[in-house]
Length: 108
Image (cartoon, rainbow, N blue to C red; front, side, top):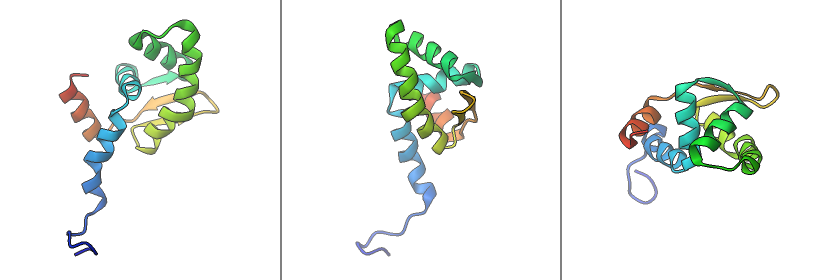
């Protein structure tokens, strides 16, 4: 028992919550959808594809590219869903069973 009377949890108990937080972002879901269809891309190609899917203007694509670089791709990489090499500007989809299951349930 823990301090507050609840049973101890292990890391796997947190996985569904972690995946749901990860997929709460429409941009991250769009990134994963694009990577599932083409698992290895340059950052620019990925940003263009996500911008198209989100209806983002050409001017906003550069901002999206920066957001992918600084926020979304590092978070997806930390979760183990993709590999991101900022030096080479390459993104590779790794996948995850739980992420795949949730995306399938969402119809994405």
